[in-house]
Length: 307
Ligand code: TA6
Picture 1 (cartoon, rainbow, N blue to C red):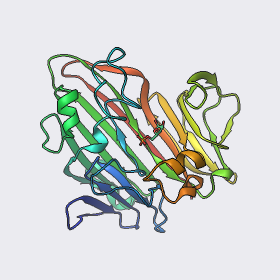
Picture 2: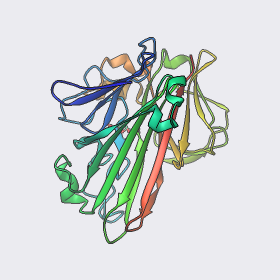
Picture 3: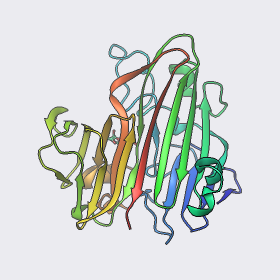
């Protein structure tokens, strides 16, 4: 595998010998591209996405920490009330900590057979000079985040270790806000959510149960599922194109803004782009994860592509 930095040091790209690639913006440690061996892009990034650090990226895989959604009120959750929507991880400049290739990942000698896998590590801590000022001002806890992006021939794994370096506990949400690229949202079904309960944020945040084994997207959809374990799959035209598995992340958010909300987002382009994207967002967001001093919260997703 080769790992290269852009001229302006804003992003790092890894390419496997068989052609698969991943590109990560240091701003937010945001994965902004993931291509298969044929060069087909698997993620959706808005054509109007800011990639200059002026605002979180509209697309790819923004990382949500320590709060999911709009900040709670001071009364509800004083710890995170002052933060902006989805927290500061996606709007901070992370450090590139290094790469490891398949030998070190899979054990000696295996790299040759599996045509390589490469893991990129990124770090952000309370002492980072790239930390979004909102964090220091509104979330004055000592923490250390390590975010890893592991590219293999048929999958992408993103994982986070959030360590509490303070002398008191703190709470967090963690979520990987993944924009998957789809050919036509009207031909998509999502499986693996049957019987799962969910909060329907488009319908008064009511708690409902997913009855059908196959969820279709026919309008604005914004649901926080608490599914059982097992993969959540995106099926297009009857063929599974993605399967998403989670490690220690109890929720899956399914979001598509549809036409009106897409029209209202300045950085969402083209406006009919909602037909080509579907957010499947593994996370732990329905309850606060309380991390004791010295402890860590760990969570990961693996997205497997099916040719
Ligand atoms: O993905 C679920 C969600 O919380 C939606 O409610 C919508 O707000 C989306 O995230 C995008 O949020 P953003 O802050 O990136 O515009």
